[in-house]
Length: 246
Image (cartoon, rainbow, N blue to C red; front, top):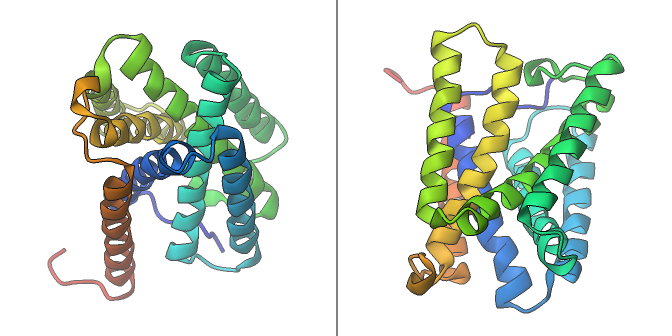
């Protein structure tokens, strides 16, 4: 039995909310609380492994657990990317390139060893492990790419978000109006929703003089957490108790 939710509009809304929260929560731990990128990465990767072990242990889809793992990959991805790009001084462009190669390698090995990249058919422990490895790296890549667009490219947080929105629009158009592989479009959308969340998270938290709205990491994280929790409950209730005319 698949433990992966159906890829619907609700899935993408939840994904964007979770990755935006991952950006603000990761920054909250590493910068606002002054824990640092390295120690934050150790802590968040440990939490990710605990959540992942629970996800691998269960026998059916549990929405809270699934989205907890997604959130864990996003928060850990934020601090991992910042550690690579800032502490190790690789820079956003080089860090993004390294992560692109790593993600492509994971997907290639997964496919060439007989796995399925179609998430609707993931039903084995082996495919689950590849799936979560790809998600962790893609969410780390998204942070680096989002930072590159917002900072190095000169677009700013809003400009970076608009570019990613346009690219997501092209992916959506490909889904509805072309015969491009749905598997390819899924992974493209999955990767792109992360830098969208990263740039939007920075837009919420950064001060106005840096092009943000100045809401801070604490307030933004709290609001996003409440929104994500409500969306998970609403999505689960709709699946268990379908509402008429929806």
